[in-house]
Each structure stands twice: as structure tokens, then as C-alpha cells.
Image (cartoon, rainbow, N blue to C red; front, top):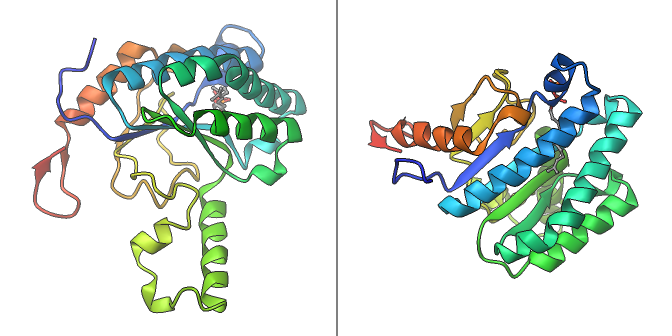
Length: 241
Ligand code: FPP
């Protein structure tokens, strides 16, 4: 099934929120909510790839998530590894390219190795780009970009006058990717939470009430349909999305 709109977003960014509440409502440990969440990751990535979306970015672990209980942090790291280990062949078959954004150096070595293997194995793929934001924080990304840019300026490789929005974008983790057209945050929360602050400048925002483990393919297609009816103006006076 495809959404009843011809206006597809090129890039959909998703804050997969509500795993903990989904589990707590069922008197289950929070980690089971994350486990169920991985099933939705598979389902939504497949749906996005089927309908021809170019980029999906998933917020899997934020720089602030380290403050969660150790068991929850280690479960999230393991789920990420298991997902990539089990799915990499299927992702490759679907011509999906995997890319990571975030500060890698603070991640466990085994996670870094899994990430690098997934990127290497899928780098030649030309279908959907699946961006996983792991140990990601947007302010940190902006600071890292500013530092790299300043050091290029200091060694004469870049003049301050050459710093445009495009130049700055090329210093971010998302260099080369189009900005998200649509941000989905599940669970009814209506916040950006340090996610892609620069890149979301003109994104359409969509906040379904469902918790991430309940967010199915049909809900994703509905989000795409809602996007198709939005009127994006980019500060001008109007043009349909
Ligand atoms: C937010 O729900 C969700 C997360 C912090 C982690 C999301 C991770 C996954 C779905 C699994 C691993 C990812 C991949 C890509 C395989 P929450 O725990 O904050 O929920 P709550 O607000 O109800 O407590």
C-alpha cells in the first residue's frame, strides 16, 4: 500500500519515543519496550524503502541517554548491535545504505566495530539511506562543526567570508544529506530534544499520540499523507508540500 499522495518527503526524521511507557503500561520492564521498538524499526524502514523515501533518520540514543540505568543503556547498545548483525544482509538486499551520526569515540568498541562494518558493507548501495543517530546531540554536533571549521580557518583552508549555510552544513555529521522535510515524534510529546536543530529549520512537524512500539506501517503512511497535504512556504507565500 502506498500513501494517497504524490508529494513524498525526501527525508523523514523520527524520534522513537514512548518505549518505556509502552512497557510500563503492561507492567513489563522498560527494556522490553525497546525490544518491541526494534520490530517497529524494521517495519518502518521497510515501508519507507518501499514507497521510495530517500533518507530516514532514527534517533536511537542521545548524548543524554547515558544517564539512564546501566541495564537500560547496555540493553540499548546490545539491541543496536543485534539489529545490525541480524539485519545487515536484509538491508543490503533492499539496497539500503546505513550511516551513523553522533560521537562515536564514547561508544563501546564492539558497537563502533559493528557500526563501521555496517557502513562499509552498505556504502555502495543506492536506495534508502538509513541514518542511525547514536550518542547524538545536536548542540554537540554544531560545536564539533564549529571547531572543525575554525581549525580550517586557522590553517588558511577557509576564509570567514566563505562560511555560508551550505559551507556550515558540510561540517555537520549530516554532510551531504538533504534536510529532513518531516519530523515524526511518537508518544504525544511535542519537543525537539536536541535533535537536528540546524537541519530541522523548515521541517514539518508531526506528533502522533501512539507510543513507538504501537506505531505501525499504516501510521507511518498516514504521516506521509498528512505531510502531503501540508502547505510549505519556506518564508514565502505558498506552494504545496
Ligand atoms: C525513547 O523511548 C526511545 C529510546 C531512547 C531508544 C530507542 C531505541 C530503539 C527503538 C531500539 C534500538 C534502535 C535501533 C535503531 C535498532 P523512552 O525510553 O524515552 O520512552 P518513555 O519516554 O516512555 O520513557
